[in-house]
Length: 50
Image (cartoon, rainbow, N blue to C red; front, side, top):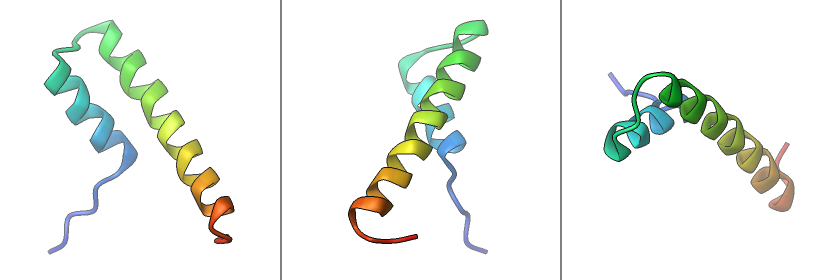
């Protein structure tokens, strides 16, 4: 089975590596996930994908 990695998974892993826990972690993961999704949308626009 192929595991699909999401923006939330990546942000959560980054929080682990940076040692961010508690209330700060939820803000970090949420904000980073939103920024990554927006970056993906922008990349798709730049490369002509829908």
